[in-house]
Image 1 (cartoon, rainbow, N blue to C red):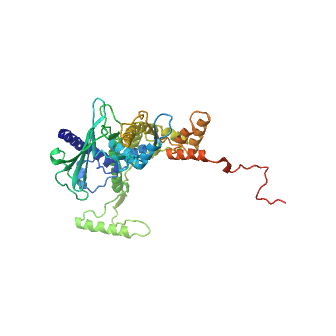
Image 2: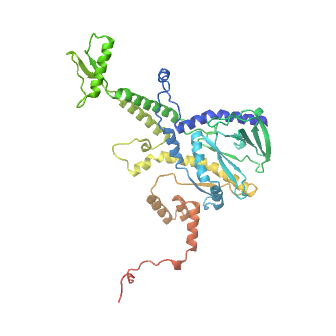
Image 3: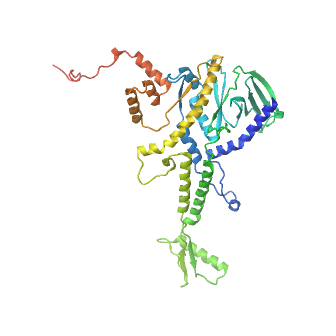
Length: 462
């Protein structure tokens, strides 16, 4: 089995550079690209790049529309209360957002399901793709092995998940533990020793990949930033050049000719100093005075920065076309403000992308909850083939619009009230509480409606 361990270690090492690159772009730590080497050498690191946060915007715009509201066992069924309890017990309201964001940035993340201290509540953890890697069967595409590697207590630790067992490893020697230093973790089994083995009663690998933009021959997916990073590099370069030009060329520079012709260098330096002093000490207006009649004053024209602005605008439009971001997300506007219908129309591509991610990520979460049920019951889950993830509507609508649409659909008999409550964004717990309140309400305790012909209790009668 050391061959599998070594293979997974090497694959995990190979995945580090692209994952780190995508994370740097999201955090705004990418180096300045397209800079001439001679210019970079002359500046000697004194030029601080201007970083435009497009990568963060692209990922956050999609992630903000991905909220899980529950799970139903079959179409038409209400949300399952116990599955939602397991979800809430593992703080997956917050962890699922991290999973979606990590998948959008790096192309994938992972979820591990195992037994917890409470037999009725399995433990579900979200894992970074920088620490976890999986192997899939080429025929069925099911996960056949997984490896998690991390550093703690001065040692490297690893867990190899197999359908029949779970193996634990630790590095033979301690690595670096200095703050801020990445510890050295050997990528070969020769640097590790096995410390234990656990049986796996699930008979499946309890690791589920959450993959962004998978393809038939690339099931590990790809980052949402693949097409964004070159555009971000170009705009960062243009924005940095624009500020450098503004520093040196945007303000007009003045010149003097004919003053002190024939003087030596020392005399010219003294004259320049006198001119500078007179300029700094001028009160009412900035005047230069020279005794020679042939002296001429003037100024160079300031640099026009509109070429930088136009180029940045062109790249911004390309970004909007490639990512589906609405123009108002990128600061693109016209003289006429957009109407509400125009804004919703502009967001249609982003909404469609969010719905696609809901389907892809929803399948992963359904696999996670099937594993959770298997861990809870101690046997393979039955009747969960039609398990469905309930997502919050990613479309931007006002509360009044959503309520009006829900009332009309219920009145027409198209959807039941429970579905309307889901569409309005209520959680399964809220829907269940409202249903219980309706069943337990005592009609006799309700306040009577106001009848206009009844005496007003606030008016004294004789």
